[in-house]
Length: 467
Image 1 (cartoon, helix red, strand yellow):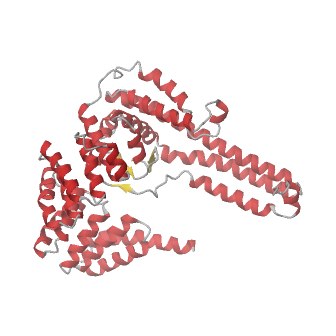
Image 2 (cartoon, helix red, strand yellow):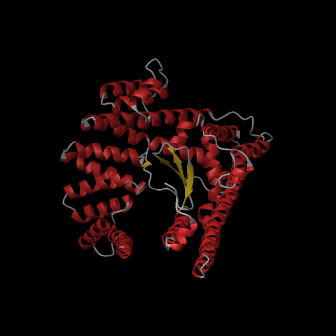
Image 3 (cartoon, one colour):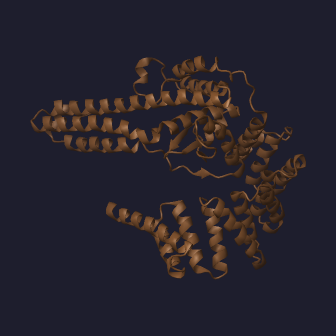
């Protein structure tokens, strides 16, 4: 079937839906500047500790304080990373899988830190405003031409304007990427980290471009959000090879920890059969045992998983993450009472690491033994005090409060949980209001419930207005 001609479109008045589509695309232009936050965040104590230790030297090099920028892991197989807000970096699981060394990931983190320092997550609105201005002008001129009877000319103006807007926005994005590349190279240099990893990762990206037949000529660069990988490699190589850190060996401790994390993530996310083929039992390295432990656990072979964990603990009986894994396997296999000793030890050694503490709290509650609930309350209160961004910990704490008849604090814990999970402002508001009714007015918990209620009420009102 042949598409209708432009003349028939304007003669029949069919251009009106096209105008609506153009306006919709204009609205979408603003939406594209927001990061894709729909992906699930993977929380793991060992991974988060490694990310922070990889990022902190770069932060100091950039003039910030250690811990000032947090790195989050997203459970997505894409090879990607981005900055959201002003001081949060998100790394996709696929990027960890694709990276061969810790230095490659540090190269990515340095680049993303360049976006943070440059305020690009905020300044991206500048590019969008310019593009939107061009787009709006073209729509107004096009609409005027259509109203005057020059339908084809009007649509031509609109389409040209939309293309110009997109080109302007993409050019703005490419400038930001180049700026972040240069800043990242500077931070790596000051931190004494070789740029070898950065170049190696860009080479991987270039190989993907070759694999998917992405043209490398200048004409193709117009429609890209990022500079071409070949150009980036050439520009960065000139900086890296003359840097004093170029020949510096990689940190062996960071590298060993990275290989553990990479194997652990593979065991957690990859199909178990594939993991077991990649890490056969003849491979007795720590990363291989880590991967197999998760693969066996996910395949419902808890004893095989525990055998791998015991072999890991034989290498280091006080490794809190090995102990955490032992407790996790036992707990999720329906043996919470047996999980408690390993988790208690992990909490002690890790100095009450919040995620590990939340797992211990879960195990204590899962025994259904009232004698364990006092310890569970103490552990979980410490967990949320150190990290109040864990909805699972709040959920467990709510169970403890409900069990002891403290319905007000149980409701407050539920309000915290729903607030963190997002998307349920009505439930958040209801629980916050219940909490306020049962708490002493102006007490810290009452004030916290009030704060949650105010935010949730505003979200509920916005939802009603959209309807």
